[in-house]
Length: 218
Figure 1 (tube, rainbow, N blue to C red):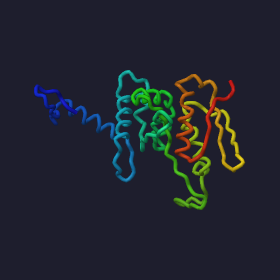
Figure 2 (figure 1 turned 135 degrees about the vertical axis):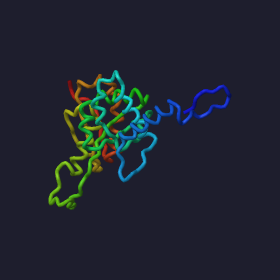
Figure 3 (figure 1 turned 60 degrees about the vertical axis):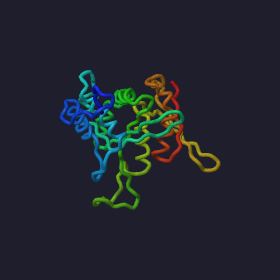
Figure 4 (figure 1 turned 45 degrees about the horizontal axis):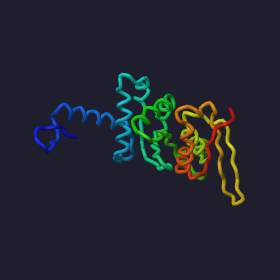
């Protein structure tokens, strides 16, 4: 960050200037919205997302700022999808309930801040192997199975739309394609139709499974 001076060469603003103090305080508060494991440092993109969330949180005109206070992130990544970039934001599982309350509005706000990117929120879930006995558990909770986790990821990816039907097609070579039908009422909302290819690419990246998204019959 630089301040204009009378000389042609820009000089960094003073570490005691109000601008520096404001910037430092903003980034410090934004950093609190990132939860990384084992002291790992956040990426520049993660800091950008955290700052965008903090800006919404302190905006006087935002009607979701109270809920955004409880939103944390643990990872953010850009994924290439044909002619655009998808911003996938991973949220700690316990904090994801706060995202679900405002998911549609939060996505709209972030897509304004990250121009031309499709924003997708996904909860961080832990899968357990069939033979895993963890923390004294003698059975594997259903929500920790591979199938259950992938089903939940599918619901996260298409939000705020909802899934009204699914069908699996098996080709002669044994490959599978999941066809997912979304609520037809959402077809004309929030550029949902333009996001179908994004949903397919992100779901493939997160699960290695192929899926085709379309809208159900009205």
